[in-house]
Image (tube, rainbow, N blue to C red; front, side, top):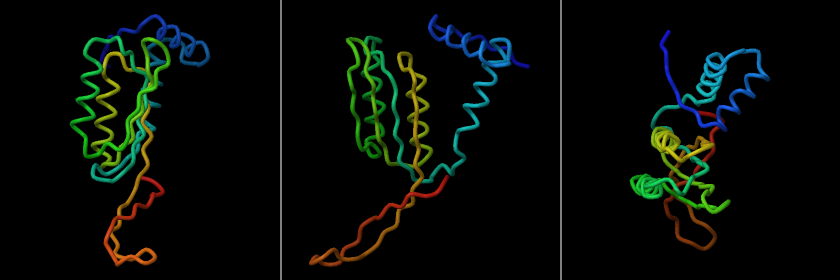
Length: 157
């Protein structure tokens, strides 16, 4: 077994202790192992180049030094996949940030993983919707035939 030391703020430690009280694990190590297993089990198995939409959301502590700049740079380095971004103030220090992306699984997953590791980011979630892109040529009403992409939602990754 490998020993790992982590630091939790008081609120998160209290939530972990409440989780332990509700579950049969009995101690923090068992509870953390259980939570890690659950987190890894919900990660979809996809080919890295599988197309998808990603809806990434998180709570952001806007008082964290340099965080706003790093978040902006993270979006700008993936500008070709970014469709939408908004930041909703919830109090004087925190926002809920939402990003919608259209890219491949690897790039969306990488963006979310890097975002969630930033200090000052909490409650990060990424909803991924697998898609296929088909290029077709056809006409709409009185238009000339033209080629464009049609997206189709897949049943799974």
